[in-house]
Image (spheres, one colour):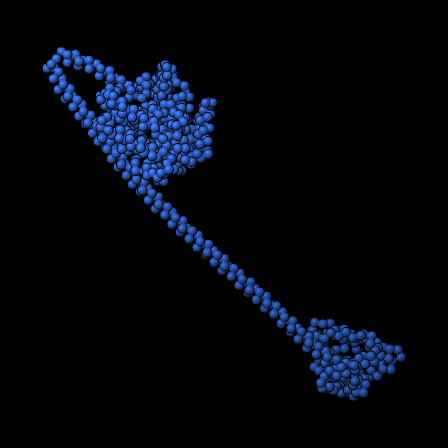
Length: 637
């Protein structure tokens, strides 16, 4: 009888255990396999489990797994016994260990038998087979437990992963919180630094304001002290002038008394002869006084005449003279003092007395022998002070002689003049500190021969001057053999006057007050730039003044002096260049080189007196700075 294939559906997974039987196994092979499984189970267990059938068993598939059948080959003889034994049992279920084994595709008979009858009929044929199935199902249950344990481990792993994610999220949140806290701290630190900076700036502004207020008060106090000193000096000068006038009046009164007594005595003897002698004496005295007046006037008489002519035409022809109001007042004040001294000297007959000529020669000799050494300057200044203060010669005459001889040094300047000009300035300061009236007379004399020392400028006008020669005489040209001197000669002499003036204003001597010092020098340069036009004459005057006084002005005024130089470079030199005169190229280059090469930072040659011995007559320039305002608006022609 041929083999019959019986295909029974089995679950692919029972309680988590995967089954994959060979679908082509024969029934004998299946029994052999089940026996081997039972032996393995009994061998692996400590106490062998005997097979006892208590109840029917059935195989249940897992909830999520599909069932899979297998094919069993049975011979014809075996098939008859199998049909007879399993006809009543296989129709429904086997219950094994609380599990159900389903055989959905097995159907052998429509009749059913009880479980007890089936057990008796299959006792001999299927006892061994059922024991093997139970062992297999036990193994499947064990594997199911392992599967559940694996699933629990998987769930634990999943929970651990979730816990780790939560921890990471918590750590990330804590890190963000810490970053936010650190950012807040950094922001607070920046706010603190900004607040401290604001406090420091406010404190600095307060200290600056306090310092500025202190400096302002110091300046006010210094200005008050200077004003008091100036008033005292003015009172002292006025008192000295009154005393001089009183002494001169006394001398004249004594002379008149003596003359009157002499006249009375002679009148008794020879009235007629005395009358004749008086007439001759008057004529002689008039001629001598005229000569004395002419000699004391340093500028030529024709030039003085032209200057008077210019002054008389000032209001009729318009703005002929350019001069600041303050400079004009100071010039008029000094000219008044100068004329008073000249009048006194005319009354005393300074040129008729040979003793006066002797004093004039002594003063001139000492001025000519001034050199750039400390000892020489000290000795010459002391000798000149003694000569001026000597009662043998009226002081007004000595002062006029001193001023005239000092200014005459500039008429024909030589190399020795440039090397000794600072020494001349020092001697002038030493002499005028003892005889203050000398400074006004000296500056008045200098203003008469050099209008740029005022500073002042005379504009050419055909209405004011009939000829060019008259204009040249008015601005200071000299006349030689009936001809006006050359422009080069005039510019050289003008430069010498301004060098002397610059050396005078920058001089400071320890223990002595310069009555015409750096303050007047600063005022001069401000008035010069505000009033005078740019031409050859004014450029030469400015160059000479800067070369002599620029070093001391920079030490005193520093930044303000540099601003003044910037105005000169920007406005004055530009105005000179716009004139297009080739004669101006040299002076333009000299002034520009003086500013751009910072020559005002270097000590000029001869500024420091030479000496191998210690001297207390000289002191370096004071470091105290004093500001003076000036207007920067300029108009050039």
